[in-house]
Length: 293
Image (tube, rainbow, N blue to C red; front, side):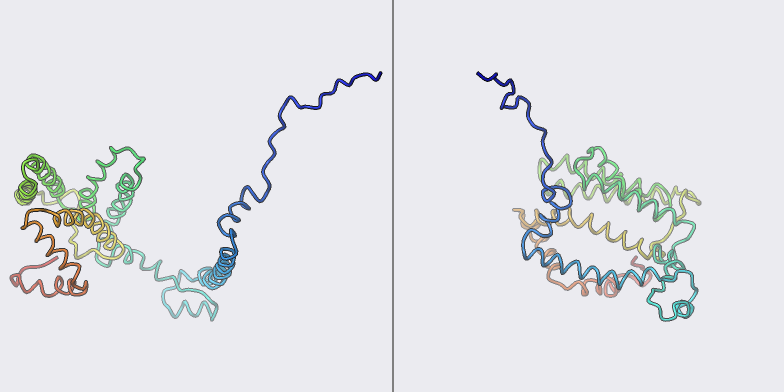
């Protein structure tokens, strides 16, 4: 009788896991799932690659052969001599005017630059909810800090602006439980009173040479002015729109119809008409010596 074998036919240890096929991992998997998942997607991907190639073949030489150090357009064209390339010297010569306008003092360029950098820190808690909520304190303080950095002048003006907002909100919270409209009106009136009285006090006590030199808004321009207008409009339009939408649903006729008239007027009138009225026609309703910023 043959000797019985001691080798078992069943494994006692599991085999090591093998890597997935190449088409199911890495870049190949991503391309197959996102760019070549079906026939139509594959066709669009190929067309897009061809379009990007021709676009880069047209734009890259224009940038790569660009001239940055000439003093005139004629000198730039003479250097290029028909070669495809752009004349970018205006960017190096006029970068300050493009960023800050023609009249903003050059010794104060650091102020709007710092205000622009702080904008990202102020917007981060609003855009990313995972950040600590305590950072919203800086978000609330940022408009007053940026105002003082860009406009300059006595520090008391932004402080009074912040104090008026705090007092108005405090009065509103005291009266809103009794009557919403009463709390809103009285809180707004308290804020305006604080601003008027505080600004007069700051004007009377302001030093002759403030910590930051004052810059009137007529000297602002360029990308800086676009950022100011864009940030202010976006920041104010959202809460104002929510307040108008809630006011339109109010049971109080005066609040409801004020909101309805405002909404329908702004939405129904062309923007160019509003700009024309604000820039030209509005001046006729003020005294001759009045100046509208």
